[in-house]
Length: 153
Image 1 (cartoon, rainbow, N blue to C red):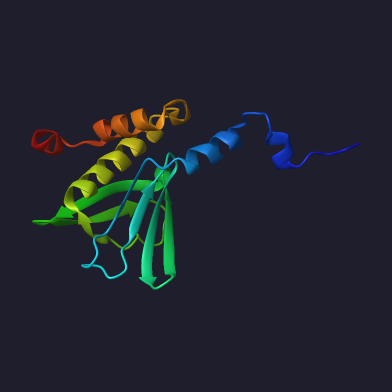
Image 2: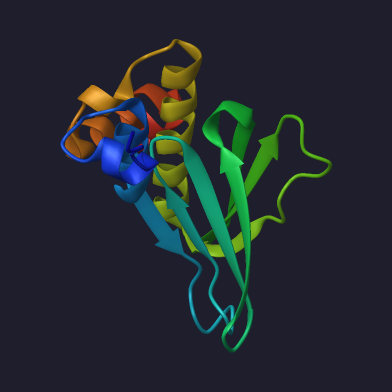
C-alpha cells in the first residue's frame, strides 16, 4: 500500500490548508518606515491571518515579530506633523511589539484601519478566503475606519 505525502495529497485538491497557504502569500497591505529617519527601515506586512513586523537591525540583520490577527487587542497611531508611530497591543504575549516609528502618516492610518477591520471580521467569523484581495482591502479599511478618519478623507 502506497501512502501519499501531505504535499502530494494536496495536489489537485482545494483543502483548508491549501487555502491557508494561498491566503498567507497574498499580502493585503504593507508599509515601511521612512529612510533616512530610520537608517534601517522597518516593514509591516498584513495578510488575512497575521501581521509581520520586520525590524531591520543592521545590514542583513532582521528580527521578525509575527502576530495572529485573532490576538490583536487594538492598534494605536500617534501622529505628528509628517510621520506617525504605530503601536499594536496584543493578547496573550509576554510583551507588546516595539512601536514602529517614522511611518508615513497616511500609510499608518490606513494600516490601522485595515488591521482593525480584519480583526473585526475574524471576531465575527467572516470567511475572508472567499473575498478577492482588492475587495478585502477596501472593505477591511471601511470596517476599521474611525469616524475621524472618515471625516478627514
